[in-house]
Length: 399
Image 1 (cartoon, rainbow, N blue to C red):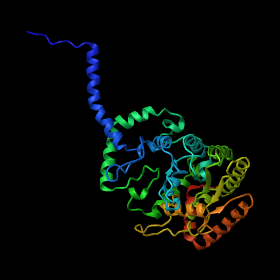
Image 2: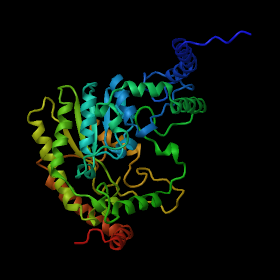
Image 3: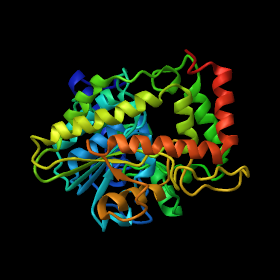
Image 4: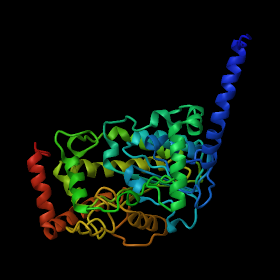
């Protein structure tokens, strides 16, 4: 009786590797062709794989890869407000190729690092950056998958391997094929923007706004919320780094203060942040003007905050009614983002919504917003009373 031939170690290893290749090559090819995260290119086929998604890991790894291999005319930056409100497909851009590079739950220190990375790979015509007071606190840590991304200097090859061979990449490839065929919008699209309307069909704006304000006014609270926030003027050095990154003589850099809903502004004031907020604006003006003295192309600073026709939009009590300008008071809609772009790029629109700040007018604008706040309190006593009652319950803002 013949004995079975014993495989040598080398032959066994080659057989094993060959079998693995037979299994893995089709998987890798499938994920490469579908390219669910736009990791390998930008072109796609409508109805086949055009609904790509950046949803994995917080999006920082995916955004760094895209910025590393695809050139854009316009880049948007900011927090989740910018991610949701600034539209790369906006008609205000006149067809320019744009990408939303905003990072949710970010701060100015982290954002400056991301901008410096992009500036090593990009030379756009326009960079628009949305700024919020909470970005300039004592926290300088990173969020999500930042440390695994190119923003933090992490190597790209392990990411590409996962994009080709992992089970989650294959699962997401299948999801992209399905949603593309059925014309289902991805909430976290490959252009970097986040569309909450694609995920939530029913939206009770009053309830959502109340939840945001409660989270912000919790006391003692998180450093990233009003209840635990402390303004750190030293963070202006990170803003200088951001401005220096795209000081190349070609790129127009526009900073803007984002438009919170008036009721959220009332929560900010109740938390004792009115004075720091106003000082932050003065510091922004001083920082931008200081950076501009040696700049090849001076940056611009615009203020869209305050109490105006946009930010004082009525909050419906009917949970089935939709607001035009806001999702939850903190996050504005793309309709507002288009108004911001129209004001910045064309100088059109309501002059009370969007004022270019300088050392010559910052004090006047601060005084104007104070006066607007007094009028809002007279015309919306119920909304202000809700904020005051919430502040009394939590003890926030107390000496």
